[in-house]
Amino acid sequence: MTTFNRSISKWQKQLTARQSGQATFEYLCVVSCCVIILVVPDSNGNILIVQLANAFKGFYNAFAFAISFSSTITPL
Image (tube, rainbow, N blue to C red):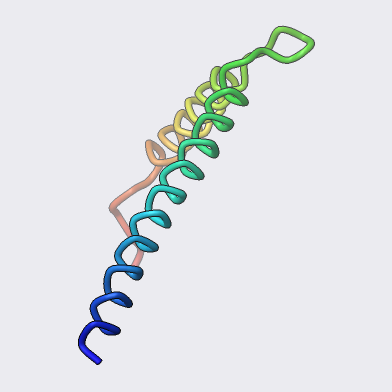
């Protein structure tokens, strides 16, 4: 019975090692696809990551402008 348990344990370790390798490969594929999508220009020559950065800058500028009008004086 102990030999059977040892062989199962060895099989489980090998399976776990293969699964972790597969997860790494899947992660690498997804991340590389995302980077390609963000960096490669579209038909108009626009790069998506530059558009994203400009959108974040615009939203932050609007937020900072709105906060600059805030007042700590509240009516009773």
